[in-house]
Length: 162
Image: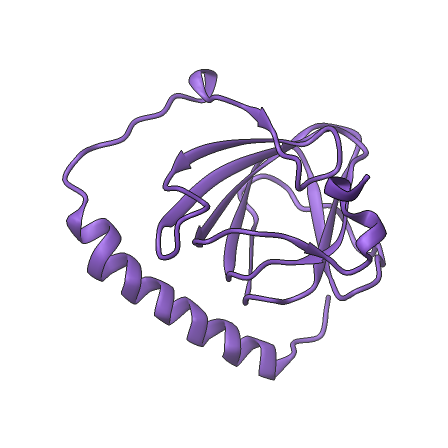
């Protein structure tokens, strides 16, 4: 079990409260249409911000727009790793299928068992973390308020610079 950082937890709770206020007051409150996406109809695409092999599908929103509520899915192949990085936004992640684990910090330290479908991971903006899959493909669903982005702790890990 990872120790709880009370400072990070307070910052995260504050961020979540702000996100829920934004979502409840504007983005969802003004949405009058209905969206239904079937898993077999998702438009998967390579994401140049992630190491080769990962794909994403945008379910809702525009990750480039400030204030837009975004829901996306990311698909990672077996035995895949996303190096330590940060995002400019808080994020909430649910494991849809496969197995994956997440670590926090600027250095990869694989500990514990991989989490199973249904598991939830959330963190505040600008919080260093990383992830890796086991011996099967994994799909996660990510929720955040745009704009999106990724900054690698070690710039040499950034696939956009290779």
